[in-house]
Image 1 (cartoon, rainbow, N blue to C red):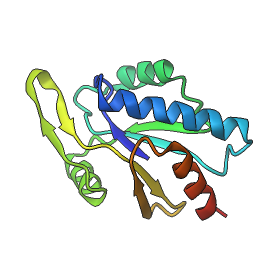
Image 2 (cartoon, helix red, strand yellow):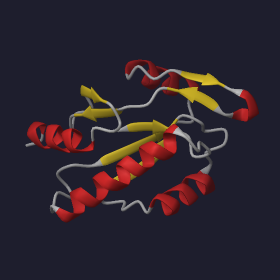
Image 3 (cartoon, one colour):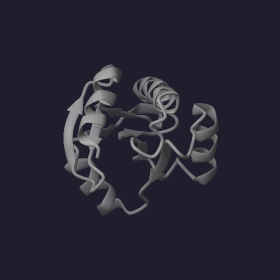
Image 4 (cartoon, helix red, strand yellow):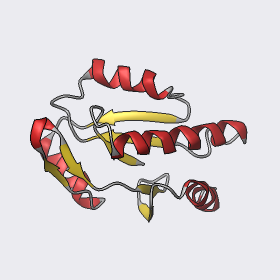
Length: 132
């Protein structure tokens, strides 16, 4: 799992590239259905249904592997960001400063590991070791 906003041209773009690599590995290794990817937008004011759809297309998301969602409820969004240690600070020009990582989560939704976003191979190996 990762946390993004679709207008981001820096960290979120790097996260998207990592998820593209992971998606390709999952597909190539026949792991669809065993390991999945979830991107959560923390910018519902700008990440409308059309924006999310355009981002899905740009990232070439396979919905069997990689999903993109947003939370419109501010309290739910804050609770989720806090639970995963995500800091989001408004920046000039309507952008955000935020930390980024790969969050490994069980099927029950429990966080069990946080990795640097460039640890692609370790992320997949760790997820596979934890999945039934």
